[in-house]
Amino acid sequence: MNKFKRIDQARSSQNLRVLDRLSRDPEWEVRAGVARNPNTPVEILNKLSREMAEDESWRVRMEVAGNPGTPIDTLVFLSKETLSGRGYVYANLGKNPNTPLDILDRFSRGDDSHTCGCIASNPSASPDILDRLSRYDNFTVREKVAKNHQAPLDILDRLGQDNNSSVRSGVAGNPSTSAETLVMLSKDEDGYVREDLDKNPKWRATWGKKHLVDVMLYAERWLLRSVLDK
Image 1 (cartoon, rainbow, N blue to C red):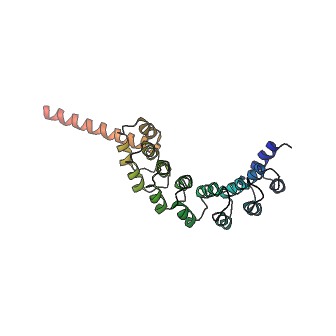
Image 2: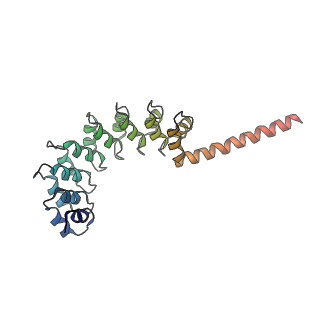
């Protein structure tokens, strides 16, 4: 079987014997496929997390770090990575919803915008972590906070007034954003912000109610004028 077929099998197989065999494959791409497979057993993930056999082995550990099936003790082990490619390992830990909060908190205080961006999009990130990242200098990190459905309302309200249109677009498309902020963004000067707003199901519901209220108020004023004219 050629390498590319083995990679496909490594990424999708549910057969434990096959996964065990492929986890020892000489090609790192195949082992990385096993490492990212959600069906891979804990024992194999633990073994792959400690792989240091070659220059590209960090790619295997990176996939273990991002696998939602990786046990907590292995995630903690990987958070202490000091080898080449550790930034990519940390970034995948930042994405993983099972990564312990103390690790996410520690990484969110660093200056690696890629890792911080991954944490900003993590649904398990705490409000304190999201608040810190919502003030990050790099707008792409703030944009990912703005798109996070778990971000608190006060953070989304503040980011809705961000000076970067990509951040405001993230808020506009987030169904967790308050109706008041959505109404404010409907008047945004940037067309892309309004375009993302129109895709937001909450805005469609909010706009429908607002339109109904406007029609009712118009009808009420029209009736009042009709009565007064008589």
